Image (cartoon, rainbow over the protein chains, first blue to last red):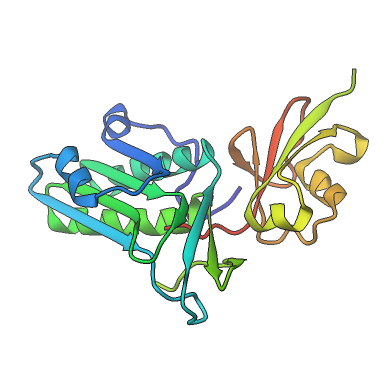
Length: 159
Length: 78
């Protein structure tokens, strides 16, 4: 299937890139700072993106909760493939992606994306590209809960 | 012994259909993923992704006995 995203293409994978990618889908809340501490590393440049649940729905109402669903197996594989491709493309060294599923409250962390590299440009650009790939090419779905009613989102939030 | 497919629906598609997993027979009318989608009568295939055995494929993908076929509404993660 033709797509501009980097997911699930049968590209050859450099073994070093495979071992440099950590992807986990979590049912429970996590502390991004503790996770980053544990991930460690001594690269010259680290880029980190944290995404949190907004307090409003897409149409501006007060959000009670955000439900996240994924297709287990394919989802993790898509993110790993994307990360391996992008690390190679940007000459970055390692990537960490943690993503929540289940029922989240406003303010909770949905996603953590982090990249180690030798240069700030590689780290920042690779982190941004990986986040965009993840948002558009990995099988996750959000449902906003408001006044006891759930609404599946039909598209992603604006950049 | 008839050939069967395992069909998965997610999120809004699951709610629209009222089921998430279903065994369906592999017949002359469901030779490809696109034909299987038409058989489900869940509307347009536009913007729907298809995965067979956990790999994204196009609607022309030919189906085989035992395949897991998932229909995926537009992704909204991150």
